[in-house]
Image (tube, rainbow, N blue to C red; front, side, top):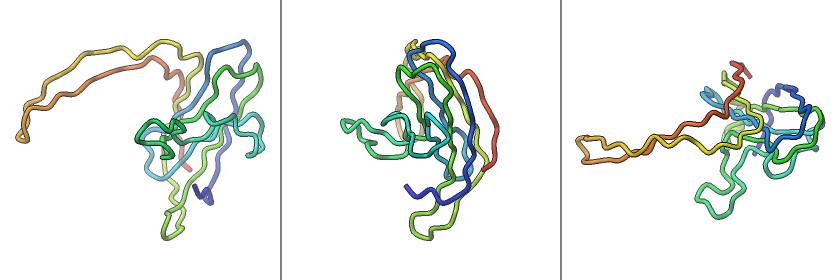
Length: 144
């Protein structure tokens, strides 16, 4: 991951023990990545969960950017979220853009299952599964 573009630093605090905390970048018009840090130093990433990539090697998207970062059982302290603009892998051109940054604290409920739906389409019968989560507690519309 080449993070040569612009960087924006956000701050949040945990005042009591929680199960988890995190952020996700949604609706990005550029290539942006959130990093979850324990201090303003970029070398203080909060473990594997603090990186914006899938670290579960048992899934098909292992090592791919998923646009979310966080921490499990974080200490009571101040945390920092660095949102970096990435660059094109081949041209090395910076790819900044607007994005929505969503955050959550203590997301311990499983997503709400809304069941399977059947959609008729020209390509044939398709099924889709809908879920929703109450984890998003704050949103920020940003530009990198």
